[in-house]
Image (cartoon, rainbow, N blue to C red; front, side, top):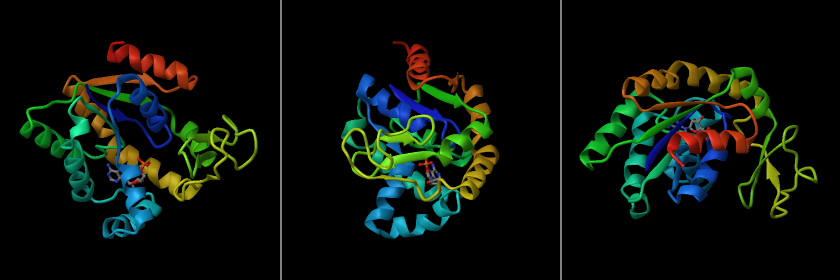
Length: 214
Ligand code: AMP
């Protein structure tokens, strides 16, 4: 099964993707995670992406398209994959289709997790992630037992550099202007599966698995 997860920043794509990996055994491919890893390693690609990411802007299409093209050709994608945070522009969606066509593959479902912008701002400003194991928390909605410390592994929690209010506003505008048109794009292709992104993580997960068929 090949899935795209669509939704604004903070809609819960990453959280749901991790649960879907466990259920369906297909890899989560997050361009955001790949770019953050490149940045941490200090590669040329990471340095190029840095200024865009810190400003809440999109990294140029050719950069992320190159990353995805390499990634989906790896062996672990033979059973399928889940794209989280890609495509984010119509140009990226067209490029993805071209790559998949050349491999005689297609996308099965585009799950769009819909959440209102004000709710996204509240979620993102309180978001915290474990440096060691990557677990996610929220200072109000899902606080760790001890402030700044991961419940699961005791690692240190940090706030993403782009989860400050100014950058968040920019990311939301970028989403509305450049990524939201993909909803219509995939609706026309008959692939869109809209999900209301309200309720608990498990409730939203249940809605997603029911549209994916089990
Ligand atoms: P994310 O973790 O998906 O919220 O992505 C964090 C940041 O990485 C975004 O604000 C962009 O700067 C960059 N990024 C991630 N995925 C893409 C993409 N598909 N196209 C362009 N920029 C991206």
